[in-house]
Image (tube, rainbow, N blue to C red; front, side, top):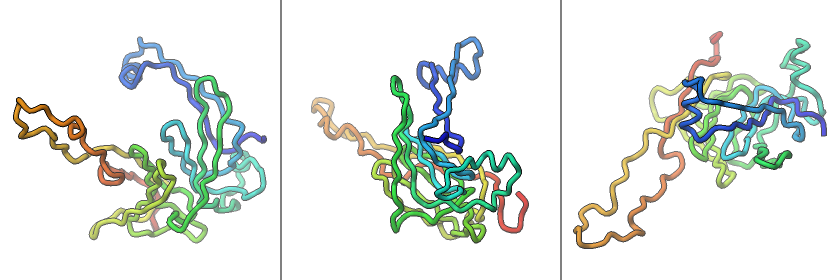
Length: 233
């Protein structure tokens, strides 16, 4: 299959856990080795799309492309061909199971859009909170998408879409090419299920573990910068 035109790389790192990775960044005495190689068995030529990694899977959404024609989009841009000649990509979610230890190839699946899917777009902002991918803003063929602060949510557990409407009041301006990040905080406090139980009575193990939080009921989605209507940046 032709080499993928989009920038998609698998990274294999040799570190012992997250603490070792953090220590390696600030302590150059700790060996930190990474091998970066292109994934060439998936052909999704596009630009201005988003890539979100969740549990070893890359989720690609939106962007601009040459449509069904297999072409090196990045090479066209390097040659100073304008991106406005490109078509708006579809609004399907493209999932790639990334290579893991001992496995060289990838597995690709196209998740077809539904009535709950967001409209096609490019230049949008994405961030991940646990198993949810959050999408904000972007532009379509007609210009900047003004969705009044709406955030689109893709649940990678169920491969389904939903959306969150902004609260009444001051909401982020419509924008595209903005930076985004996310945090799992704040979270609601979990009350111990064995509180007020007499010490001589053994607590019920089934009640010791709190119920997992429902998706999209916690965390913070942060936007920075971007291009708004009538503004340069």
